[in-house]
Length: 236
Picture 1 (cartoon, rainbow, N blue to C red):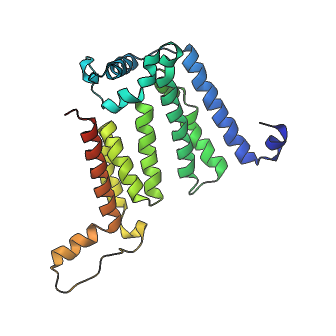
Picture 2: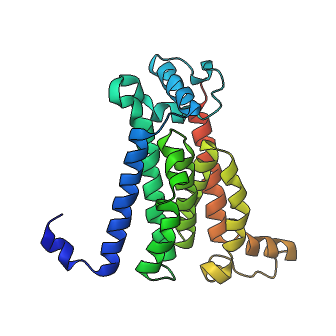
Picture 3: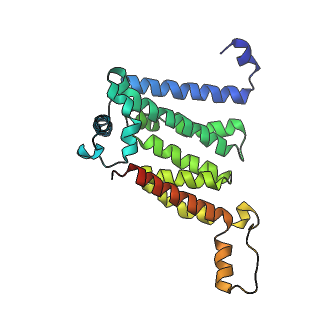
């Protein structure tokens, strides 16, 4: 980065840049001096199976979506490509940190948001989990992206992320109820598209009030995304 550009950067932006630079160096160091998790060996073995046109579940103890094996397809090329998955998971960590800052910036200054994000970005435990080859970094990225999309009131995107996250690993499903409850008129505005009709039963009026447009989008898109990914990953 040219010296003039650095000198013109605001102090808060400079701090954020330095934090991410340190986070990248931390992960590079762990990639170089770290070790390989046994799960990563399972992932890469499954990738070799799909590269040969076989099922990843032929690899004993592989209990993940076939999509993960396909994502790690480059590891089958040999050499340094074997480390591709670790780099991918570490990059997901960094992107998660960036989203954390974006979320915190809703109510905090850039400097404070970056300081709190350091708990994630500069945490050696978080960094080592991805650098050793665990896919949890991708799940965390999907979960934080889901939170960001919800706070942005982008419920179609949030539904897609929720459905994909649950397909990737089941436990993000626990956040569905919280997001559904949060998407009430207090947070998403007036209930557009729901008008009172004296001819409708009271129970129907209440049901329409509960399932406002935001909640309908979230439910429909998440269910459709989950079904489509499961169908695509299921061999006929």
